[in-house]
Image (cartoon, rainbow, N blue to C red; front, side, top):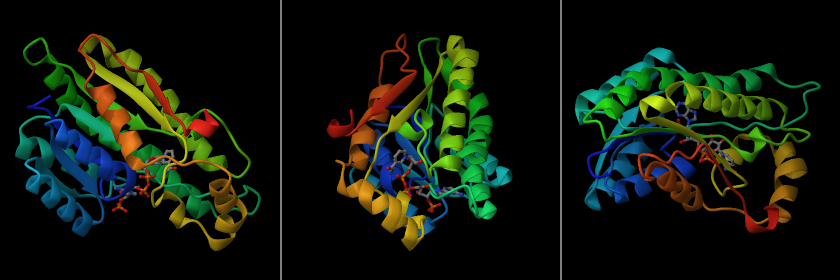
Length: 250
Ligand SMILES: NC(=O)c1ccc[n+]([C@@H]2O[C@H](COP(=O)([O-])OP(=O)(O)OC[C@H]3O[C@@H](n4cnc5c(N)ncnc54)[C@H](OP(=O)(O)O)[C@@H]3O)[C@@H](O)[C@H]2O)c1
């Protein structure tokens, strides 16, 4: 995939950073999108020092204008867009009874509205890339979660956002697959990243620590390998859904 251009949202940490590194190793030029510019600059430098091409794009994707400007900047600077990895996300756990509605809004605005804004802005460019030269293909990979298939007590609104991402992915796949834009969802189990760190000490004590004590955990690189697998399939093969689970949960 030597001449491909990829956008990875949430590339400032965890799964996004690992995915950006992996796609760059496969020869893609990688646009790194997130809010923490210092981390994006550091990763871009690392990728360039390893011989790759990277562009740091600071954006808050919950703001539709910033999401659109980010995609525009990538196409202007890197010339095209072949792959969109919608990875940015937030997980805040806890009971629905007595919940803080502001936390729900933050999760919905990142996990759902941010993904929609990036997808909407990227689609015309992805369709154009897939149409270019007749033998190309473009890809959208949405990083959902096993929480997009299974609901648990305390995961309520996180479950809502990820079930929504799964349904949207399937609908969009049916709309654009014949135009050679492959749309797939990747559903990881537990991965060692900063994702849980935004929760309160009580939630860590009651939900997160007990979970971590009783299960194996994946590495961000395991998920990056899954993304790379999906976007490097031959043109005729589209991966609609990929689960990656720790062995003891599979
Ligand atoms: N870790 C797990 O166990 C696990 C399991 C299943 C699925 N997932 C999913 O995997 C994805 C990546 O999560 P992770 O585990 O790698 O967590 P993470 O380390 O917390 O990464 C989240 C990323 O999202 C970015 N982000 C958050 N809000 C943003 C915004 N408004 N605009 C742009 N970027 C934003 C963050 O960057 P900035 O803060 O710099 O903006 C960060 O790079 C998420 O969708 C998550 O739901 C994770």
